[in-house]
Image 1: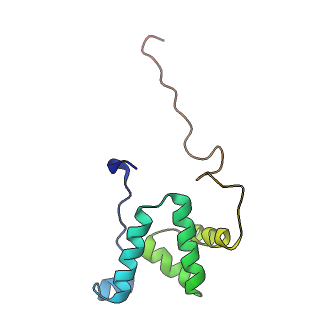
Image 2: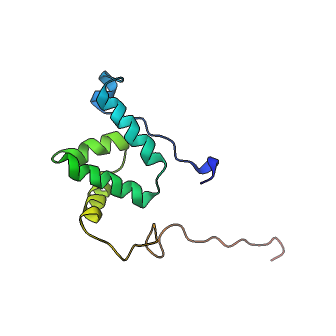
Image 3: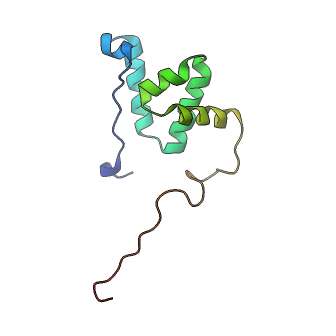
Length: 109
């Protein structure tokens, strides 16, 4: 990954981190966000989905505050972790996903 394209580390805005920035929970939130900064979108979604499974009830809302990943994305990652998805192997996005290619036009045409 090029340095100019590196993902910035998100700063957690949860109540715990705001009130006690040096607590063990705040340190854990910073560690989660540092790890997520180095992952692509599929692995980021699946990692947060795994945390949601482990943390249990209320975790989707809390992880959304910690990571700034939307709740539907976290739920999708949680579902992907629970089942083996062989169709997405080797791809980050579905075929046809992302921006469409832009054709360059020459000045002479």
